[in-house]
Amino acid sequence: MTHLLRGQNEAVLIAVALLVLVALALVVWALLSGREAARPKPPPELPPEARPPPPEAPKPPKPAQAAPPPAAPAPELSAEERRRLREEEEERKKAAYRARKAEEARERDERRRAEEELRAREAEEVARRAEEAARAEAEAEAERQRRVQAEAGKTLAQGLEKTRSGFGGRLASLLGGEKTLGPELLGQLEEVLFSADIGVKTASHLLDVARDGLAKRELADPEKIKGAMRSEIERIVDLPVKPIAGANGAGGLAVWMVVGVNGVGKTTTIGKLAARLGASGKKVVVGAADTFRAAATEQLAVWADRAKAELVRGAEGGDPGSVAFEAVKRALEVGADVAIVDTAGRLHTKAPLMEELKKVKRVLGKAREGAPDEVLLVLDATVGQNAIAQARQFHEALGLTGIALTKLDGTAKGGVVIGICDELRVPVRYVGLGETAADLRPFDPKEYVQALFE
Image 1 (cartoon, helix red, strand yellow):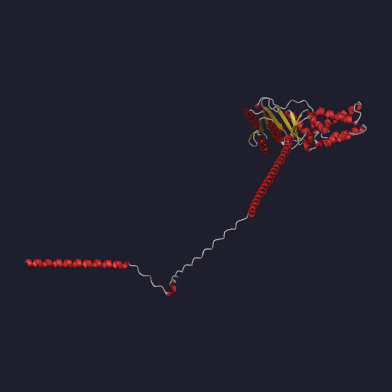
Image 2 (cartoon, helix red, strand yellow):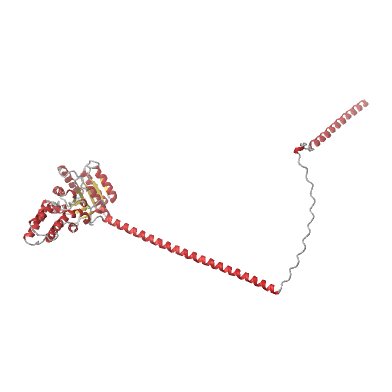
């Protein structure tokens, strides 16, 4: 039994040893295989035409060149040669010094010329600027003078040029020079006077002055008759008048009622009056009480804006009296100096118009006791004697305090001023001589007569 067990154990040991040997063999084979795979494979062999050329064999080094023989020592210079070389060296230095000095002098000259040119250019620039400044100042002064003249407006003499060449010119021609007094001359004088749009009454009065002076032998020659005509016309137009309310610094609110028929320039005159008053420091309120004409309100709005005046308006076709009342009340509220009330201007021959204007005047009195302070009638000078008829009817209905005569520069009928003053005894307050606000001028009787005869 024991022998049997021992035999079995030996067989087991032998089997294990074989297995170990086999495992070792496998490990050795695996190691050998890995080394073979890791070894680099030779590149594939290229065809002969693609193979690179074989490297060239290194060239043998060139034999070293023999060094040049040392230079022979320079021969020693003699004293004379050394002296000559020193002199040449000194001469070169002197030449270089002179060249440097010449260059410096040239540069100084160039700088001096450049500075002189710069100063000359600066002087020219200063002169040019001074000339431009003087020219600009002269132009500005000319423009200022032009504006002053434009703002001053036309003179009365300029505005009466057509009248002077008409009535004044004919009168001067008739009564000038050496002429004999007699019925024929008086007849010619009568023709001149009655064709001058001064009115029949005024023409007759002036003719009577000439006849009376001739009868009393006070007027011995035509020049004296001309002087008498001038003196009488000056007396007629120089009416005693009080200062226009609100225009000369009077305290409180001044109420102006402006009347006139359509087409005479009433609305424009109101705008110019507002501009004049505003320019003099007055605070102005304008009432657009011509409610029957929408264009009048729009025109007043433009003028009020220019004059920096406040505009009070009503509904189109509304009650004119209501607008007039509100305009005065507004002027009182804002502390205005002047309230200017525009009114309707249909034909003066229509009685309802005059009644409407009377009503507006009564309403103004209710808005402020004693108003209106001024009732100003605007007349068109170009209608001649018809202006006298208009003035008479407005005066009878409203009691005029003054007249503004427009378009005097565009007509030869400026003699109508004489007829208005003579027949109605109503002073002419303003005359219109052009389109600008400055062309509405206060009327000066002496200036009018002077412009008429000279």
